[in-house]
Length: 150
Figure 1 (cartoon, rainbow, N blue to C red):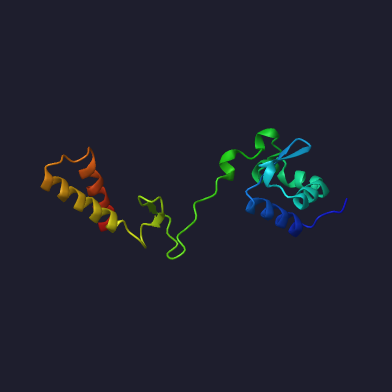
Figure 2: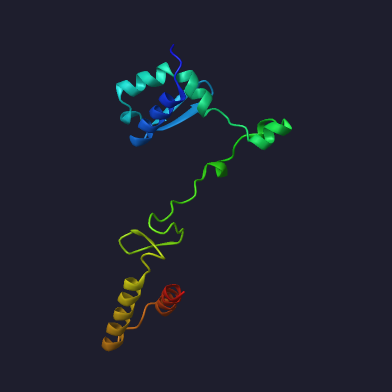
């Protein structure tokens, strides 16, 4: 077995992530999902570098707990793996809203003015035709206006 460099392991993990393959250590075994996405070349690399991957993916002790000599309770929890949301590439902001198409838009760079105008037009059309407004429509519009104005 040839020892892998950290760069080789990093590249292997990046290749797996690009293919949507999730790799986990379970005891002395590697598990990956979905199995159908694994190429023969990647399978061979997993077999070759199994020991290094198990060491990388195995339980990790928090640095502050390692200093105190704390045992299994020092293992990383799922909360430690949650990554912060990506920032807006233009302004670096962290406040977003989703339009009706499901697009994630920056509140600062792309405020929901179009959404507010659309809601206002819909309300005018409803009033003109005597159609009652949906429950909460006025509050939604007021909230959007407040967000845009701030």
